[in-house]
Length: 445
Image (cartoon, rainbow, N blue to C red; front, side, top):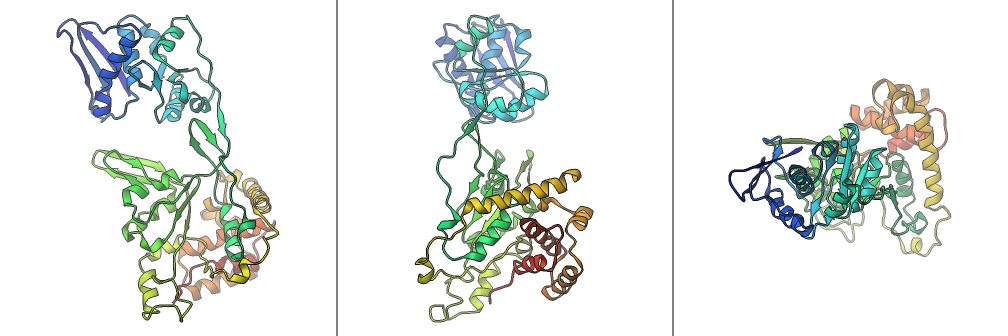
């Protein structure tokens, strides 16, 4: 987006912002007027027109404050026009001329770096912008500090990247009593997930974790709305999306996950916008086998079993179930299990195996432009994950008996390859295939 400023002698005292600006952007003129007054400057008593180009695209947000102010300062002769053309600027102005933080600084910094320009941003966002690479970044606390820097009176400090420290220790698998099969499945699934989430201008080492309530709408989950905002699947990008009480979500909402799970992207098409957000997330879901939750305990269950289980599980479509690699029936923890001491193996030991398996995958798949087993398709999948003779025979027989789809067949291969990597095996054998098949869905009726 370009911010263009024109000052004309006619129409004294008028200040207009054009270019399909929303309420926040249109109100920039009042914040800019007050900020300039705070540093001792008054707008000329002339007709001022600010155009947000291209004019046919809607503009939203308060981050236009700073570029509008800089454009006015250049048009008034306070700052050199040629110098301003070398920067991309964004930031919100307070009435006292302080420059406050706005979202989207890192993407703006990356775009500026690609264009060979510098970036002007709020001081609070400087660390975030510094991750864009080697470029000139002016992270100013206030408008007057920025003007003084441009005139050479003072020098702004160069921002440096920051890494956020973990706010708390993560739960340890030692604390989980019983549920050994669930721990094993968790270890396998962690292979396919990466860490990384930006928060407060610092890169976080913790993977994003999102757990929306089952009343979430389709727009809330996959993105959308009037201004096409990213949804939970994108906020969980490179992290975990946890859906508790899975059948309680609306069926249409759940089915909207099918494309993001398959492609790693959320594509939102609207009459006024077509937006693509990244959505390479790990889906973890939990559900009861039936509404009452006591299907396996006849003494406590309802009188509608097993029909209640069939009705309850049918709320989730077959294609969505088919896209979930690991299905586990987790039994209730008994009192005897709760009295047992903590498990000998904790999260650190599991993390070491996961890291070792990821290193194996990275070394094997880097020549093909891939990083994880989950990304393997076509010839690469056949070459890297085809089992030995006994394993292939078992998979073929199981595919016929279990009526696996083509997608399910390939997902079993990926899981088996991952299990083999966890064990440090060069090839996929019958045992790896058998364990992978044990994780395919079996209806609990």
